Each structure stands twice: as C-alpha cells, then as structure tokens.
Figure (cartoon, rainbow, N blue to C red):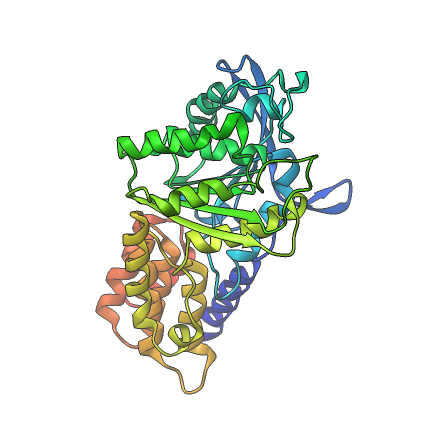
Length: 402
C-alpha cells in the first residue's frame, strides 16, 4: 500500500516538472513543439476575417475546468507571438515564478497603419506630409473589434479570469494608449513599448487630458518603455516613443492610474519588444514571486503576500498550484526529518486557492492520513470524490479508512 502511494507522489512531482514545458505534438512520426493555435474571427465590425493566435498554459489541459487564467492580448501577434509566449512561459514557470500562468492571445493586423491609428493624418515621424499615411484612421473600429469580437470570442471559448492585459509596440503601442484613454475599464494593465505617441500632433496627450477630466480609472496600470537613444534628424524629428506621455503623466498624474516607466538603455527601437514585455509583466505583477526564505522557512507568509497583491491589483491572485503541491510533498516525504506542519500549510493553501481542484483535496487528505488525522482525512477525501467521483486514488485511500 505504501509503495503505491509513493508511486503516486512521484507521478505528481513529475507532472509538476512538466508544467514548465511547452506542448509536444507528433506529426508524421516527428516530434514538434506546439506553442499555440491559429483561430479565425469573422469580424462584422471590420468586414473581414481576422487571425488570432492563442497559447494556453501547460496546466490548462489539467485544470481549466476548475480555474480561470488571466489573459495577455498582444498586438502585432503575427510578429511577436513566438517571443512573447516564450517570455510568459519563462516568467510563469519553475519554483519561483514572477507572474501567474496566463493565456496569450496574439492579434494580427491586415493593415497595421489602419488598425493602429485613432485618426487620419498624412504627417509622418519626419514631420512631412506623405500620401503613404493615407490609409490611417481605422483605430476606433479596431478598438470595437477588440472589445466586442476578440475578447468575446476568447472568453466564450476559454477559462479566463477578469484580469486582462494589453500590449503593443511602436505603432500598435499607440493603439494600446488609445485603448487606455478611451476604454479604461476594458483592460486592467497596459504595456506600451516605445510607442508612436507623436501621431497626429500628439493626439494621445489630448486623450489623456480628457480621460483625466472624466476620472474613469480604477486600479489601472500603465507600463511604458522608451529607448534611451535619440532618433537621427532630419529623418526622424519626433522624440523617442512615449517620452512626452511619460512627462505629462508624471507632471499631472491621473488618479487611479499607476505609471511605471523604463528607459531601455541597450536596445534600439527595433529590438526592445521582448525585453519590454518581460519588464512590463514583472512590473504589473510585482509581489507575486515568493522568496526562497518564504518557501522553505516561512510558508505562512504566502497568503499574506497574495492578499496584498490581490488588494493592489483589485483582482484575486493565487500562488502556483504546482509549486504549492511540490513543496507540500517535499516537506512531507522529500526531507529527513520530515516537516509535516509546513507540508500541511502548503496543502491547505491549495484547497484555499483552488477549492474546485480534486487533486488539491486528495493531496491534503493523503497528508492527513500520514499524520493519523483520520476524521478530517475522511471529510477531505470525500470532498475530492464529490469533485471527481472517478478519482481512483482517493477512492482507494478512503476505503482504507472504513
């Protein structure tokens, strides 16, 4: 009997390790790494079919029926889907993730200029008029497409939480700023990467002033990156993306909008997107990462930390279920002498944050059996079976208590 439960423990630990890996698929006898799938959204607003790319966390296949995930919506999805999913994967994996796992939605543009610009203007970054900008001005329709069709599609088909992030770079960074100041309730955090804030004589600054006057912000976060390099005149005569917006918001802050600005020192405008997303997500979820001291010495601090982060974001945040499970098993069976009090703390954290997870209740029940807390173990295992009547390990363990 003991060897069977030890085997289950080893299998659980192996599953935790697999959380860090992308999905693996086999095609014609060859292994492939699959990071996402293409979907087509038929847009009545734009009058065309649009591609979106969706990447799911590795844990999604096991837990989407009992938990919801934040969603990162990334513009320029055709260009940045690969690196951005890699950034999210890296930041949300292993024993000390810096951000929670999330769904990544990459949104491609058929005409980037049309979709990104709030107004029509023929003046470019060199201050000159050119017919090349004639297709501009479709940004408002794109925002309605994003709100009414893309988000609606994602939330109808996936287990999503209410926490949404929008990210864009350069011209699509302009679109992100446009979204923030005209629809402040749609996304909780905006990541603006060296954006074309210069568009139409700095129209975005006027939109920011109008939003400030309306006072429509509540726990919004704005993360802006700019390159520290100046653009070469006379070919580009505007300031490097976003500096004016940063200056305006620092001089006259908007209540309810938390601003963070990073000046990227090494990268140029053309290669700062990945590091901007990395820094932006870490900034948005500052306080999510658990220290090694807390994980090994003071697990009782974890709930306090998550509560503080949830208050700051005005959204419920939870530690990684896989990490909590790993440390629970570690302190129950992975060290000598064992530390059952710490193990119980971790298992109880998972039932608190993932109350609909049958595996969380089973792990707690098994630990209670080990500690001879049989009455509570019976109740906990029955809870696991109520959630999953076919949970064979819970059935077998409960039968030993009869």
